[in-house]
Image (cartoon, rainbow, N blue to C red; front, side, top):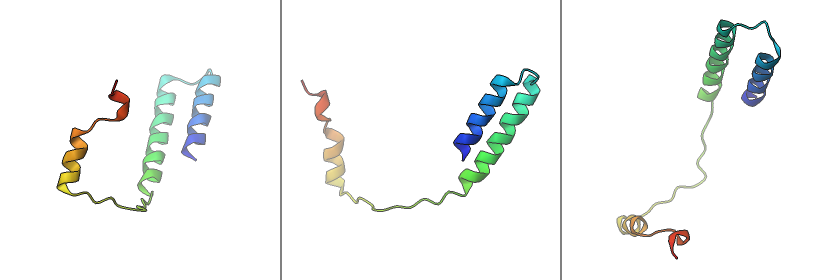
Length: 70
C-alpha cells in the first residue's frame, strides 16, 4: 500500500507543473506521517530463535566466508 502511494505521489510531482516546492514538501510530509503510522502497526513474528554458545560465537567471529579464500 505504501509503495503504490509513493508511486502515485512521484507521478503526480512529475506530471503536475503547477506544484510548488511547498506543495511537494507538504505532500511528502503527509506521506511520511501516514507511512510512520502504518509501520507502527506492523506485528513482528519470529519463527525460530538460534541459540549459540560462547564458543560457537567465538568460532564464528574467527571464521571467514569461503568467498574470501583464494
